[in-house]
Amino acid sequence: MNIARIPYILLTLSGFFILQEGFINRINFFIGGFSLYLVFVIAWTLQEEPSNAMLIGFFAGFIADFSPTLESPFGLWTLILTGFCYFLATTVRGNLDPQLSPLQMTLVTASSSAVLLLLFILIGAILGQELSSISILISEVIGNTLWSFVLAPIYIPLTIKFYQFSLTARER
Image (tube, rainbow, N blue to C red; front, side, top):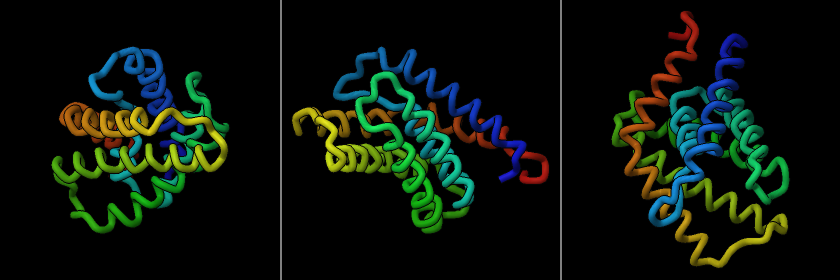
């Protein structure tokens, strides 16, 4: 990754995190909630090379660990997003078409957000985090997946624009 992209990426991720924490978390979504920050990171990662995706996952997880509503150990999001973003960029992205169609992006982003939340719950439980009841957790994961799928026509083009804007002239 070109070092000139790093400040822009950090600023963009921080902006989406503040938008998520300050505005979107205040909306009462039907059946669970919606994490714009999470699907934004996943959609961005699908555009990147594996080493860049891992770095973006690290930055995104580090920023997500500063959530005031988070009751898990510090560094858990960093660990999970770093590994998951690398997995997405190597395994999932490698098996898809070189130019992702909007439908592929929607399906991969929605299903990846569900898998990522389940990983967070599982690893958090292993580390001793207190969990809600199974029905509440399932409702949250299903709700987040549903809203990720429904709102994809809004956040996927937005993510692609932010990604393309972050590229240097040589990378375009």
